[in-house]
Image (cartoon, rainbow, N blue to C red; front, side, top):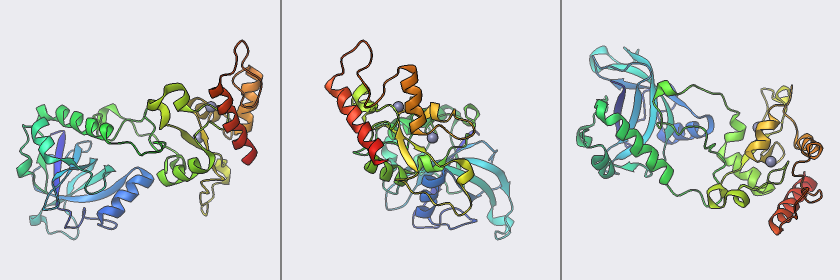
Amino acid sequence: MAAVVLGWNPATAFGAGPGPADYRSAASTVQRTGLYATRWRVGHGQQFDPGTDAWLFAQGRHGRGLLGHGVVASAPQPGAALPARLGLLAGIVFDLLLAPGDALPAEGLAELVPELNWNAVRSTGTAVPAHSEVPLRTAWTTFLRSRPAPADWLAAADPTVPLPGSLPQDSLRTVGINRYEHDPDAVRQCVSFHGTSCAACGLSMDRIYGPAGAAFVQVHHIVPPSAITPGYALDPVADLVPLCPNCHAVAHLGIPDPYTPGELRRMLAAAGGPVPGGGPITGSVATDRELEAREDAARLRDNG
Ligand SMILES: [Zn+2]
Ligand SMILES: [Zn+2]
């Protein structure tokens, strides 16, 4: 089996520890760090091989639906607190846990993934039929992508990073990310203070791509790695700046520390690239939008 559905009643504890067995705290851990590891009680003789997709399915009177995704991290073993006759504990690492009430409704699943009996999902795990693995993945990804975007921006999500559950495990590798740059609350505070224009080149994604780009800006953590000591606490306004994806990538080419927005502006100026607040780009007349972008960037620079 390469995929399993884990039934869970939100009125009961979430997972079998270690750590709090509280769904909201698990979901907020995933939001902050990208992962939440727990153990799950499964039956004997089930194939829970590491790497198996684990889909979380909410059941019970508060509504039924697909609520999260994870991966089997360790095969089932007897647990210290669980007599073997009651089952084994498999290690599960969840990489996405939606807010309760945001699940992909069971009615839709019955239609899109009819081979799996969604009325008979067991808490100890129900195997996903091989033919249903792709339809399930597609239904989930389509559902995630079609949910209404936050009204302001989507900065926390780098669209080049696959959505959890959208690709089979053997298509993925684990990449460490700077979590300060992906903390939704910190990003929100950074962008609400600094705006969405790139602090280096002034580009604002919506001016280039229209609505599809409007919600996307990256934030860059300007604190040098050597300054991140154990007591370090992020200041989202002082320690983060908005950058467009190009400038952000180039910033991280700096050695040993990433280039600062000021260094990036000097690089752009030296190379004849777009410089906020500088003269019109050679060979063109600045449009109102360009002027506006430069004003945004200049304001940012003056504030910073
Ligand atoms: Zn830029
Ligand atoms: Zn960065």
